[in-house]
Length: 248
Ligand code: IPE
Ligand code: IPE
Ligand code: MG
Image (cartoon, rainbow, N blue to C red; front, side, top):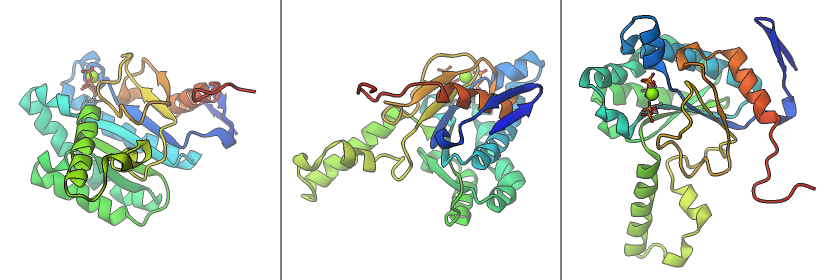
């Protein structure tokens, strides 16, 4: 498949499209600052990128896409910025839910939704239930999410199962643990893309990224587009994944 946009084209191997792409959507604030706009404007524009990239990923046949929208550490930010981000799901779903449904996209979330304001919670839960039968791209919002927190939550749940006598310690293995993570039922993450030039995970999907390929781009999230997605996938397709083994 040959894509040509803005005179740049990337030949993508249709048989090697990543099944699950996880995005650390970074750089909203810097993108806005460059335009002498408030950070919140960057978050607002960033939601348009989520729509654009979800539709393109769906078109390419990607099965799952997870976006890091708010970390457990992002509560350290100014309350006004936090409150603004908590209003974005409503704006996003008011504008795009109908179109996502038309495109067969299924919505999910990972994280502590119970910590979000009721209005935010309700709108996300409604979008999830309205799309639960859809069979296209699974778009998961990591919202009030932290990788360490997820592992601790799962550990607590399994400890409780032991205490209740439902399982014994010997029943716990990697498969069982993984099934009790917030990402249960999602396919393995093949590709992690972080925008905006930072080379770190910032507590994102620590378990799930164990064997994912990482691609970092300097482009800020609001400016990330289909061409850049294709470029990242082309880089992924050039990688040799070994999973600890030796290639023949
Ligand atoms: C990512 O953009 C969005 C969230 C973390 C909610 P940032 O807000 O981190 O933007 P920068 O990194 O400050 O530019
Ligand atoms: C990671 O970005 C969190 C999200 C994209 C939601 P941050 O901007 O919070 O990460 P740090 O602080 O640069 O590590
Ligand atoms: Mg940031």
